[in-house]
Image 1: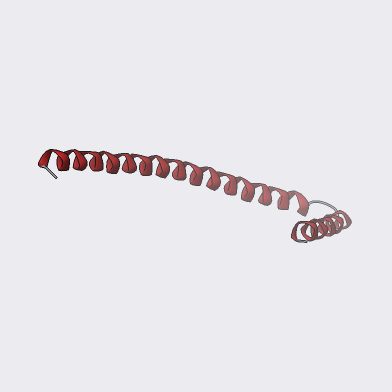
Image 2: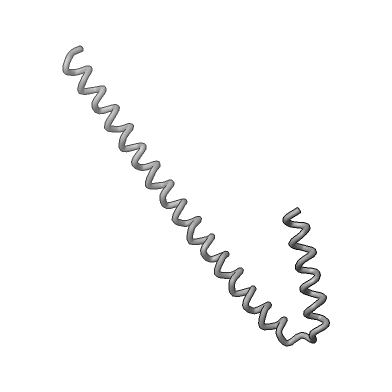
Length: 80
């Protein structure tokens, strides 16, 4: 192996490493974006749960009981 061949191999390997670094950075950007979106969805769900709880508290007692029964039935369907 001569020096020219080794230099070319080193150049190719350096390019490959740089390409992989670039891909990793791009993937990290996508992961960060997805994390922010997921956090937004979770915050929205939490807000909606609080809003629903507030609205449920002003319903008549029998309506609240019926809704609780429906929730339990729905949970059974989802879990089962």
